[in-house]
Length: 150
Image (cartoon, rainbow, N blue to C red; front, side, top):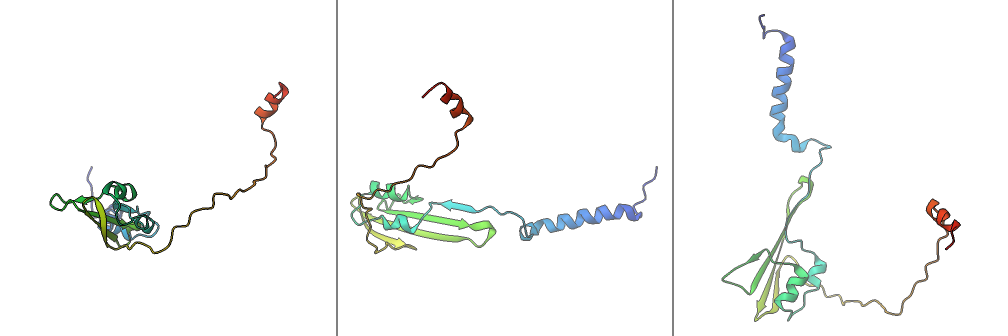
């Protein structure tokens, strides 16, 4: 049996394979393709930074912010937090925060976040809400056990 590559039926799959392999480099631009969000580093939020207060110990700051991403052996009084997010293949967003300590007390914050000036509002302790009971039909199990008594 002799194979003839000049046959047009053999060229179509070959052209299709070449076209698909050439377009594989730009597959991220095809609409409808799901792209995963890529989070790296410590998650940082304004709510977390608002909880930081001057004079906090390192242990208290670590409880609020988590373990720092970078702790320099030569500068143990400076903690670095870095958060990077690349949502669905879009442009990467990076946030940085540095906590500065002196003798185990927080004395400064540097970076992309600033502590808020809003006073913390304590919820009132004497508030009570009455929730009405919802009447529902009995389940099969409740009907069976109801036959035998409560």
